[in-house]
Length: 359
Image (cartoon, rainbow, N blue to C red; front, top):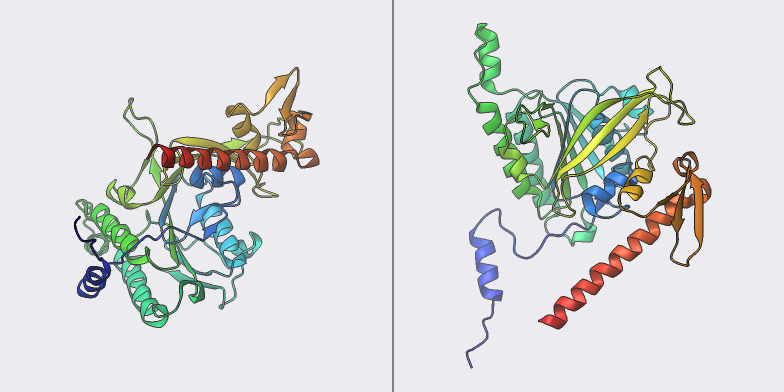
C-alpha cells in the first residue's frame, strides 16, 4: 500500500511562492437581494438570494431597461442593509443624490463612496489599489471579522480608452481598433482573480445591441464577448412599455416599464431562463413582480375557469383570480415560494444521497 500524500507542505509552499493564488474553495456565503424574488431565483436558484459576493455580475440592457434601477438602486440599498460598504463608480454622470435617496440608498459617507470616473484604466487602478490595501489591512483577520465591500460600475459601455480621448483631442474619430473590448476583458478577468477570495463583490452594467443573427436572436452586450466569459453572472434586460393602472387594468398611458430579464449565464442556476418585471414610475418594483407567471410556467398553478388553483403541501386548495395573485392575497405568493423552495432543497438532498450510495 502506497504512502498517503500530505498536501500541507505543498499547499503552504505554492501559496507563498506565487502571488494572486489561493488554495481551497471560495463558495459565496453572502448574497445581495436584487429587489425581485423571481430574478433572485433565476440567478441563484433561491428566492431569497440574489447577487453573490466574491464574483463579477454584469447587467446588460438598452437605455431605460431598468439595469441602473437594479444595480445602483436595489443592490446598493440591500447591500447597505446588510452592513456592506458600497463604492459606486458612475461613468455616465447620471446618478444624482436625489435619485439615489428616492430609491432608498443611504448616501452618507460612511455607507457610500460615489466616484465619477470616465477611463477604463482608472477603474482598473481603483479596484487593484483597493484590493491590495484591503489585503494588507484585513488579510490577517478571520473571514467573519473582515468588512464587506461592493463595487458597482454603472456603466462599462460609457468608459473610455486613451485612444478614444486622443482621437477626440485630434478631431480624428476612427474608432479604437478594438482596444476597448480588450481593455474591458482585462478589467473583468483581473477583477475576478482579485476579489475571489475576499468579501468583495463587483456588479457592472453595460449596453446591449440587437442581434443580427437569425439563429442567435438574443441581444448582444457591447464591448466584446471576452469579459462575458470571465463573469460569473450575466443578465440581459430588454425595455418594454408598462400600460397598466395600479389595479393591473390595461390603459393607454405609459405608467412605467416592463423589464424582460433573461439570465444568460449563471454558475448557480439553469441559464436562459427569463422573467418580466413591472416597474411603475410611481411605486417602483414590487418584489413579487413576475412570480405568478414563473409559477404558472413551472406548472405549480392549475387554471380553473377564470381563477388559478394552488394545492399546498397539506392538500389544501387555494383558488384566486389573477389580480388576487398579483396582490399576494393572504400571502399566497409567499406560501408557494416557501413550499417550492423546500421541495427543491429536499430534491437536491435526495439526489446527493443517491449519488453517495452509488459511489
